[in-house]
Amino acid sequence: MNQKLKVFISSSFKLKDERSIAKSTIENKIEFLDFSFEEIGANSIPPMKVCLERVKESDVYVGILSKELTDPTKKEFKIAKENQIPQLLYIRETSDRKNEMKDFLNKIKDSYTYYKFEDVKEFQEQLKRDLGSFLLEKFYDLRQLEGSLSREQINEIYRNYGGNNYYE
Image 1: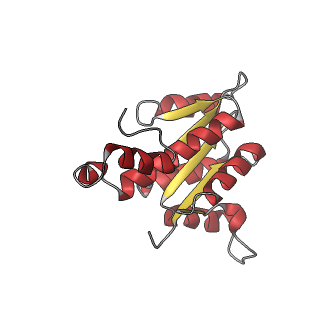
Image 2: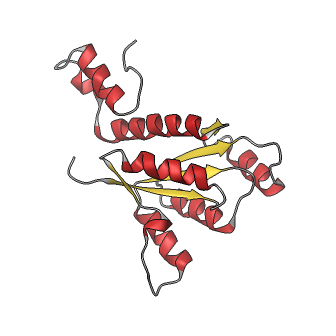
C-alpha cells in the first residue's frame, strides 16, 4: 500500500493516557498516519476550524470517551458522521459519567457498536485489533485469497494486522 490511512483521534484532552496509547499504536502501524490535532503546527486559522477540516480529510475516526462529552469532541463526531468517515468508538468505564455523556451513549447505542474498556492496556489491544480489521476490510477481501493461499497464510496475514485467526 503506497499511501497511509489518516486516523483522527478525538477525545477530551483529560484522557491523556488513552490519547498517548492511541497515538503510539497508530504510529507503530506502518499503514496508518496519526492525523490528530496535536500534529498540527502553528497556523493562522482558528483551531476548531483546522481540527474539523482534519476530521473531514481522515480515513477513520477514533473516538475515546469517558465521563464527559466536550464540545470539540461532539463536533468532531458529528463531522465524521456527516462525512461518512468510519468511526471506531471506545468508552472508558467510569461510575461518575455526566448526564450529557449518558444521553449521548443512549442515543448512539442502536447505531454504533462501541467497545467499553477499563484500563489503557485493554484499550490498546482492542484498538490494534480494530485498526487491523479496518485495514483488512478496506483493502483485502480474504475470500478472494482463499484459492491462492493456504488457510495458514491467510491466518498469518490476519494476525499481522491485529486480528486473531481468520480460520479457527
